[in-house]
Length: 162
Image (cartoon, rainbow, N blue to C red; front, side):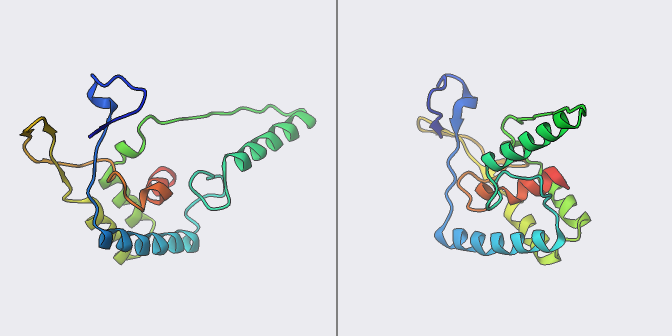
């Protein structure tokens, strides 16, 4: 585990875990990512209002969209309200079974659902402190650190919006 920069290193939550991912596994993830994006696009699963981690959609685009909505409301003497959420450690709290349920409920193809299940399930971890190694634990939430799939947030986006 690596300490997070600028954080109190005496607190366990301020350390970033290390995941060892093979090169073949990373190539496999790129293929799966391409298929997930294609299926999500075909099924129109990701709403137009989703700007994070989507191609050609950045923070500036979302800011323009919100500004235009506010200006339109102001010009037409409408009330405008906004709710802004920032979920702390959202990727670390991704519930595997909930995501899998949503993939099935939204009729994502069986092979992609099965691959996602295999990708998330039966992951384990150990903690090493000095020369002492902990017992093996099972990961039931979150995603692998350093995964190629996750920075694009397709799996998390599916979980949040479905």
